[in-house]
Image (cartoon, rainbow, N blue to C red; front, top):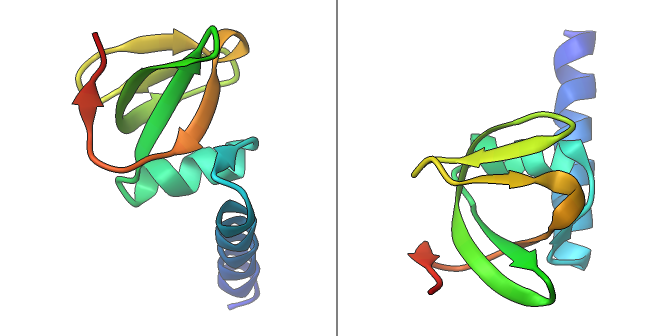
Length: 87
């Protein structure tokens, strides 16, 4: 029971931090987006490059459901709206 409560508290803290800023800055925030199928906007070189749902990630790479991959050190991430490919 204690572990479940701690996990729920962590989820709540991440949700609050996402509400205060649309930017995804932590692994916890990115995990919440992935688990809840939240569309994530990938910003590369100051412009939106892609919007989609995270399939998996690690400390170096983010993979999206349509098999797009991004190096985490090269992009910024934001909570977004509808999934779309930016040309």
